[in-house]
Figure 1 (tube, rainbow, N blue to C red):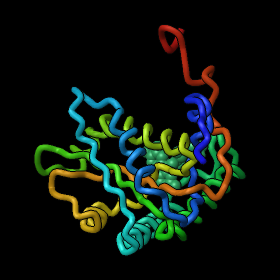
Figure 2 (figure 1 turned 90 degrees about the vertical axis):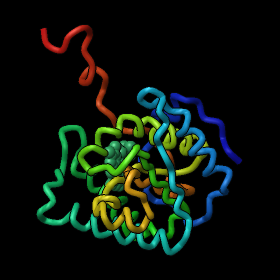
Figure 3 (figure 1 turned 135 degrees about the vertical axis):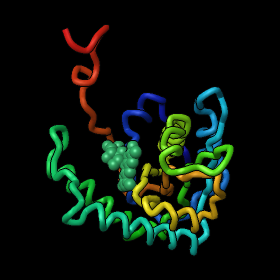
Length: 211
Ligand SMILES: Cc1cc2nc3c(=O)[nH]c(=O)nc-3n(C[C@H](O)[C@H](O)[C@H](O)COP(=O)(O)O)c2cc1C
């Protein structure tokens, strides 16, 4: 049964949920996530966000292989990944890394991989494409919040798309489409809990930044 969760509870507990069960997610719930994403704003209301829900086992395996390769590079000795941050202890970062590694091992078993894409008028270079993100990320966040509200786990990822040519080939993207995010969706193995974020006192000023 789906519990009803209030909007603010959803926002404050919408953690990146990477450990997911292999149990399939009903098609109507997956469609509902995309419908929620479609309600987001876009520049001039152009509505160019497009979504591919990858459920085919072979396709998931191909994307999982690309993600694994990128995760290995991300955690490798040359990666420059910070071991700790001012707002995130080494221990918390290690827990995140463990979840990233779990996801890298199991991505092919996760029932649905949602690819957030953008449709352009014509062929697009990687540089031009990045500017369109502002009209796509609000939809991605809507999708993540909708998943949380429905008791589904999801996490925004981008590493699996870093080999642009290979991921485009797997997804069969035409020249005028670009993939921005890969969001594995499934029933969570862990529990939802509060996100850890900076307090507003550190991220907000009234009227102007400096005195
Ligand atoms: C632009 C962007 C790219 C991200 N790429 C990845 C990724 O490739 N792999 C991954 O596991 N998480 C990725 N994340 C998720 C972040 O790691 C996550 O949102 C952040 O650590 C906060 O986690 P929390 O919501 O669980 O506190 C990405 C998030 C954003 C906004």
